[in-house]
Image 1 (tube, rainbow, N blue to C red):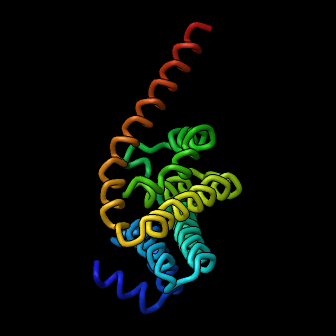
Image 2: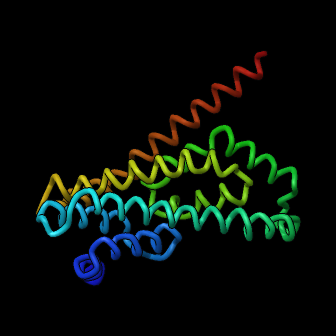
Image 3: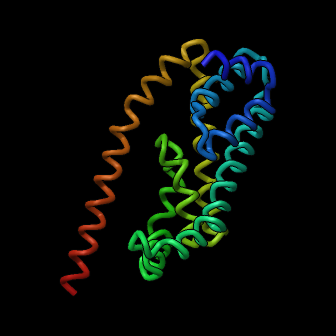
Length: 197
């Protein structure tokens, strides 16, 4: 953790950008900690607010776009070439694509808030053949909301940012479970309604 703080303190906006690109692509980087610490540095007037938000947003968007591109190019071709060995037929790939078009794109928006999920959503979106326009709309909006949320933690809570961040991360799982439960209820209700027609 000290290395991350030193990196951001020493390299400023470039440090925020580069760490977030690496973290979003999937390297073990504590993304939320970087954002909250950057917000704290804005609170301390070590960094300026607008360039901090810009660096965080650009790092996030570049990282998620790299993941999407990898999924769209290598991921899709690998699925088509070797997918049959994993029982992933073209029909199943097409079904995943349709699911992403209807509902899956929402995971691009909220997936940032779930460690581990944000690293996979763009890869899956790309591999499923999701159009770039739909990907960009949801993934970039989610990146903006996510970046602003955690920069705000550092900025508004000042020197208390770390315990507040820990508390937020403790309850993220609860919120996600509730959200998943609501999504399942919605999908079941929709299926039952279709079955009656």
